[in-house]
Structure formats: structure tokens, C-alpha cells
Image 1 (cartoon, protein in one colour):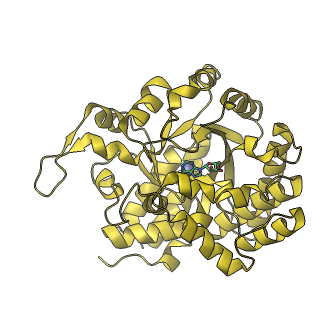
Image 2 (cartoon, rainbow, N blue to C red):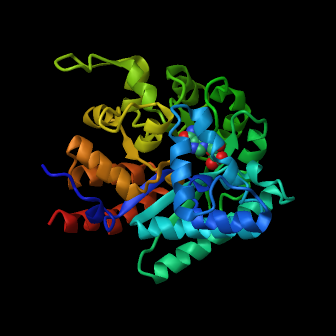
Image 3 (cartoon, rainbow, N blue to C red):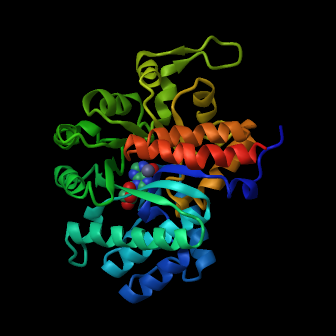
Length: 361
Ligand SMILES: O=c1[nH]cnc2c1ncn2[C@@H]1O[C@H](CO)[C@@H](O)[C@H]1O
Ligand SMILES: [Zn+2]
């Protein structure tokens, strides 16, 4: 079957669970904001700056990939900068046909110019609200839920978990930890996760991206993660995948599949950090065939020069996936979202299913 073209995927309703606010800025916005705060950039032309981010992130290592965030975080230190970046994020996702998005960022990284944690969250929430209202007026409605991230090398996870719960009725729908994975296991933040469980709150954990099975196992069995950020190395617990081999799931992989634990897979990002060697060889193909709860995500649109529609087009081309696969991925994401069950169902039944029914003719 012919691959579905990018331009045909854009109008399809899509759901996104893993997108970093500080990884999705418009290059032109970075340049304008950097001038205002006196931050020096590696390029001052929008196209060249966009190319710089993709090339620098194309490093083969998560640690070097993460270094590029210094230039986005630097321009997100004021109410004005945070508000604008959040507003444009909602507009850009909506223009790409994303109807539901969970966008994450680490408030502790935005305190360099004197803002408090609460002021950071308020500025971002206001930006998302304005962007969503503008998108709706333009005929491309989007719902944005916020995830607050704590940096795994730092020691503020309890504080950020409490911040998340404080804003749970004001746009924040979940919590996450991110940053360099090797050397910083999820159990370092066990207190925060146990607190969140006692609060009946939701969280995902970046695990199984730059480090393997122990990180995934801890995230699920020690910390109680609802979802796995990436989780791609789970394939290390699946054997016999070469042609003709009998596929055998190890205990952890079987548990993840049986419990329908969602995998927030981010194909292009994984190729850049070396977690996968190419899109065609990305474990998402196998995980899809084995019917794990697979979702497709952008991770960092700026660093990967990508969008939800582009990720789906790449997968359609690499694996021959058609509309029913794209619908399956979208419904998987929506089922795994952190908003209430009735609201998830409404988006599935009122937007996603009718949208794909129309596309499938
Ligand atoms: O794929 C990833 N793996 C781990 N950490 C990440 C990834 N993408 C971004 N960040 C980290 O999350 C912070 C908050 O958004 C970013 O500043 C970056 O350091
Ligand atoms: Zn991520």
C-alpha cells in the first residue's frame, strides 16, 4: 500500500502525549526574545537557527542532545517569554491538526530572572489559554493539558509534585521527570511519586530511552508510573524477533503489554539520540505488531524539525501503515491521556472516529 502523504495527515485529528514546551519554539521567536534579554545565539537567521538545532541535536547522545535546550530555556525566563512560547505552541499544534495535546516543561528551569514557580505555571497556562482560544476561532480547536516535569539530576521533585497538585484544577493534568537518564534512576524521586499516588494524581516517567530495562522496571514497579516516556528499550526484553523466530516476551515486557501501560514513543528523537538506528529499524514496528499500547509523539519539534503529521508520515512510509493504523495510534493516545475518562471518550467519539471515518471514505 502506498504511504499516506504528510499533507493528507495534517487535517486528520491527532492526539499528542509527549511534547516539551522548551523543545518546540519557533526559531523566529527565539531570535526576537533572545535580542530582548541579551542572550547570544549560534545563528541569527530563523532558517539557519532551525537547522542549527536539528544538527546539534543529531548527536547520537541524549546528554549532547539536551545541551541545545540552553538556548530555548534562556528565552523562557519572563512572563512575556513564557506566555508567548505557550501561546505559539498551542497554535502550532492546532495548525498541525492536533486536537488534544499534553505539553510538558520543567518550571524549576525558568526561575533565573526572579519568577516564582507559581508565576511560571500561571504565565504558561495563560499562554495556552490564549493560544487555544485563537485556534478555536480559526476553526482548529485544540485542548491542551500541562504536565510539570522535575529534572532528574536535581532535587526538587517533591516541590514540583506539590506544585502539580496545587494546579490540578487549573490546567495541570500530570507530572513527569526528564533529563539525563544514565546515573539518575527514577527511584531517586520515590518520595515525589509516592506523594502523587496518595493524591490520586497522574504521572509518566522518562524511562528506557538512554538507559535500559532497570530504568523501565523501576519506573513501573517501584514508582508506579501510569505511562512510560519513550520506553523504547523494552524491546531488550523481547527475544526471537528475527525473521522466523518465535517471539518471547520477558516478564517485564509481558507485564507492560498485559497491563496496557502506554508507551510514549518518539521516533525521530530516538534516532537523534542513538536510541534507534533509523525510523525503519525503530522498535515501534515490532511493538505495534505485538499490540502494545503504542502512541506516537514529537518529543521536541524544534530539535527534530518535526511535527505530529511528519512523524506519522515517516511511520506510514517505513511500515506501510494506513489510516486504520493512524487511527489506532490516535485512539491509543486518547485512551492514555490524563484528563477524565468522560472527556477522553468525548474526544474519541466526537472528533477522532468521525475524522478517520471520513478519511477512510
Ligand atoms: O527526550 C528527552 N529525554 C530526557 N529529557 C528530555 C528529553 N527531551 C527534553 N528533555 C528535557 O526535559 C526538559 C523539560 O522539558 C528539557 O529542558 C530537557 O532538558
Ligand atoms: Zn521527552
